[in-house]
Length: 189
Image 1 (cartoon, rainbow, N blue to C red):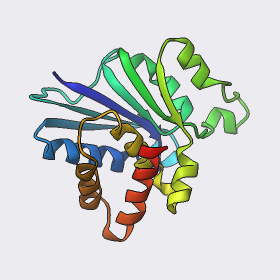
Image 2 (image 1 turned 135 degrees about the horizontal axis):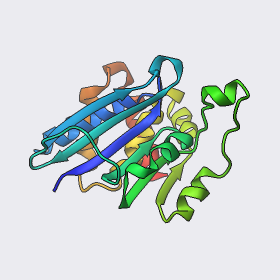
Image 3 (image 1 turned 120 degrees about the vertical axis):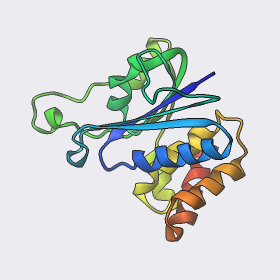
Image 4 (image 1 turned 90 degrees about the horizontal axis):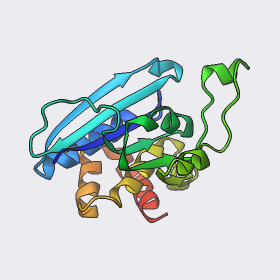
């Protein structure tokens, strides 16, 4: 049975490290893993999507609409943008941060109200967390990705130590402790 995780965010938020960490962890757990990155205008704050698929044998790196078990979202609007990819029993793990897209910045549009409430009204299970505050508490606003990974880890039957090992192997040594702390704060929030 193949499991599908979509990681969605805005360029520069650390979604690529999150997908690398997840891919590494799942490989060490013995799964066949396919990771595929789909970039928008990432360097300009555009959408960035990464697919992580794992199971006994994975043939394609792409996740189709209605197939994602999890959407891990660095930003509320990005979760709403990709909600149609979630399967009926799927969950959204969400950072409540709002990053204004270009149409909002230029005044051509307004940031939508109550996106979490709107998704929940559709019957979607949303695990929403202020990951930015937790990342800052860990020591860096850039650690939002590890707070989200900590939150996601609650839904997996993989020991915390294995996640911690993956952090040590995927993150530059000088940032390991900060990232481990961010992971723990996300997991325990």
